Image 1 (cartoon, rainbow, N blue to C red):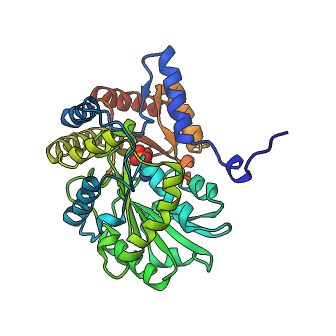
Image 2 (image 1 turned 135 degrees about the vertical axis):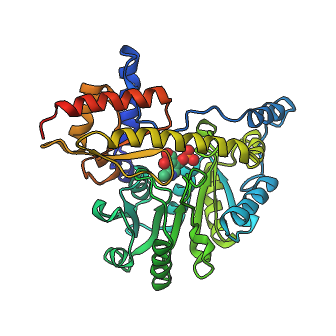
Amino acid sequence: MLTFNNDIMGLQPSRSMAFMAKAKQMQATDPSVINLAGGEPDFDTPKKICDELFRQINSGYTHYTVGAGLPELRKRIAEKLADENGCNYSPDGVIVTPGGKFAIYLAVRTLVNPGDEVMYLEPAWVSYPSIIEASAAKPVPVRLSLEQNYKVTLEQLEKFVTDKTKILIINYPNNPTGKTLSKEEADALEQFMLRHPGVALIADEIYERIIFKGYSNISMASYPSIADRVITVNGFSKSVAMTGWRIGYLATTPEIKNAMYKLFQHTITCVSGFVQKAAVVALDCAEEIEAMRQSYEHRRDLFVGGLNAIDGVECNYPEGAFYAWVKFDIPGLDSEGVCDYILKEAKVVGVPGIAYGTDDSCVRFSFASSEEDLKQAVERIGAVMAKVKR
Ligand SMILES: Cc1ncc(COP(=O)(O)O)c(C=O)c1O
């Protein structure tokens, strides 16, 4: 009889993907269902990026490429990280990966040995614990509290570090809370890293181009004191609406990159050359990116403003990304119960907070949806909440 790898068999299915699948299934039979469970832009990829892809394919650029990414793309990525994020990475420290998700896996898998510990901030994107487990390491969630608006402090980080800790993963702007990193929090992270010289920091900045008025992004690799241990992960999925293209990247020191490249060359070989060529064009889409950002900001105001006017519903205005992290006061219901209730009564699909490791009676809704759907969703949730006896 065949047996399977225990680490892989122990992985939980992605709860957010499960809800997305459930929503699609429901929509097939009932088109009035509003799906706010997704995690992707509702825009098409800008035309000039698509044009470049077709141009490359039509000119026969369809073969393997060599190395960790096309030299011109790695150079542009290093320049972007310097110009926009204040990070000093060499192009030789950049790896172009099939999505940011694989970049995180590549980094974790290369840095840990069985039994090592990887800390990550919770609420957390659903894939971190599974990526850590798939690498035979132990996930260590650092629980942040809703009451303190999920503030990261040195004190909280210190509670979870041990002599087995190898990595800390952070994600700002955050999925699911929409928080950005404040200067005070970034300073606390620097202090933590200085106290633990054997720890690497993975900074997942995949939503870094979607930040709203009054806030800005702080890249931890811009702190020179710890930069050589900061692996910055980013990509094109969210910023330029390229989720299906499967392209992202990480940046680190050439030495750490060389270790990761050992695994990369025996698994991925390369990201499609024509996709990489199109990604070079995607790095020159400031106007398109800004137009999308403004649209998300407008929809955030509309959706979150509407929700906050409902009795029993509370939501801080997200500072970045395109998710609203909404707290419901419905007695006796946890986040999964709330989600099922809202789905059944309002026909609006969200993802329960528990999928992100922490309940807090919160549900994550994506506002990368049409204004029409967002208005409808607010109206229906309002009607359902009016019936709830609190
Ligand atoms: C926090 C976070 N990191 C990374 C990713 C991975 O994105 P991709 O693999 O499409 O680049 C996602 C996608 O949902 C995400 O939400």
